[in-house]
Length: 174
Image: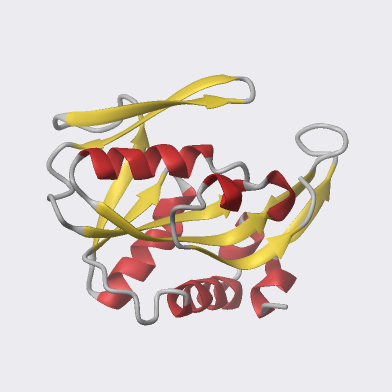
């Protein structure tokens, strides 16, 4: 068990009955929890050759920024549609309740750049798969995906089987 796990609060029946919500805000609110989370995620990057980190909105920014800083890399923001000021490329994907669209700046990934995708949690993998497709559409190469939490029952890792996926803490159940 990772030491980070003791900082993750599990909230039963949120946002609906039968769901156990894994709260990362309890990790980032605590200085030791935040340090442990970043250090553990950083260990997952040991030996990985990459040029840039891409963080998925919004908690991917929280974890991606210190990882980028710590490793002397830039941070590319994967945002919800309509939030970026320069020319963008976008990708829509299905959610259980509809559709969502994410985008990145068209010039933020160069052809051949090796990218690590970072987010707080992997559930079904839909958001991060769309982010990977965006990066690949610009000629980038996704060399690793790093998450603080993985909800193993939702099979996101299987959906992302063509990628190198790593997580610090794994939970069964939603």
